[in-house]
Length: 102
Image (tube, rainbow, N blue to C red; front, side, top):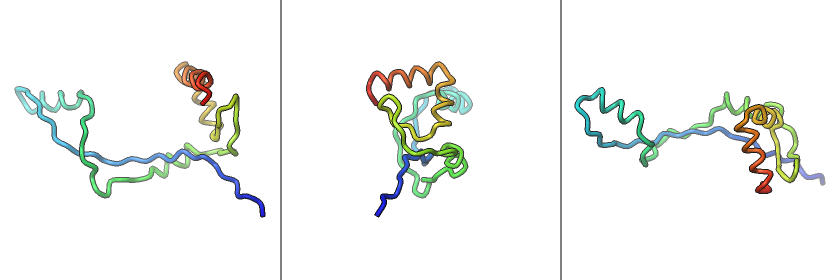
C-alpha cells in the first residue's frame, strides 16, 4: 500500500482578544489616540471569534508543491519562497535560517 503524500500548509487564522486599558488623558479623543499607539495588552479570548481566512488560505497555498529540502530547509510553497527572497528582509531571514540549519 503506498503512503499518502502529505504537505505542510500555511493556514491563516485569527481570533479576537478583548480587554480594558486605563489611560490618563484630557479627552476621549486623546485617550483613544494614546490607546491606539500602545503595545497590545493581554486580554480574554472572545468566544466564537476564531476563524480561518479562506481567501488568504487559497492564495498562500497556491501552487503547492511536495515538501522539498533546499540546503536542509524544508520548503513547501515555492511561490511564497520566491516572493520572500525578493525583499532584503526576506533574504536576511532566509540566510539566518540557513546559518541556524532550520
